[in-house]
Length: 117
Length: 114
Image (cartoon, rainbow over all chains, first blue to last red; front, side):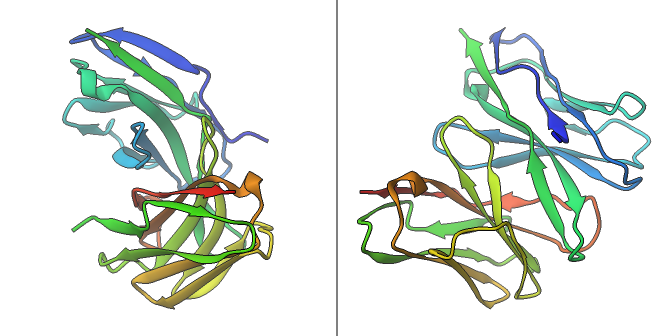
């Protein structure tokens, strides 16, 4: 069963505008972490922002903010004042405990964002 | 220093070759990961090492052999690969404890099997 769902395969946004990338998740653990990564065409996965399940406030990191709605199990990424360099693939991920006692990260299918000049 | 270094960045190998991918981190992380990513797909977990011991093997074919010589290094040994193994291979590291720890990724190795 898909545990991280990103329903937007592709998004366009005008430069300097804000954009929201959607992410919903499914877990029965009370303690979990949600993460967003940016992957430019070069391939590297760049960590952007994270939200802990017990965090009372939405996470913010510069132009990135996370709209966390726990009851709806959603963790949408908001990018404000988009820049051309924001054009990339964006992945939502969750850190999940395993039966071996460690953790693994599972990823959604990603959203490709294109910023238009 | 939040850097994970992977070498080489690009690798072309024949189906009869033996090669190794290397990954290094100096953040004191005790969990290290190998992911495989095909074009336009999300990363898929291959292996997890925790405190230098193999913790997870996601049913990866034996032609891929991981190794963790010490807490800073992670290798992936490749032997008798198939063309369908061509992909971006990503290494990552994180703290091992707690649900909130972020993973830091290397730049990846783009592997082409010919």
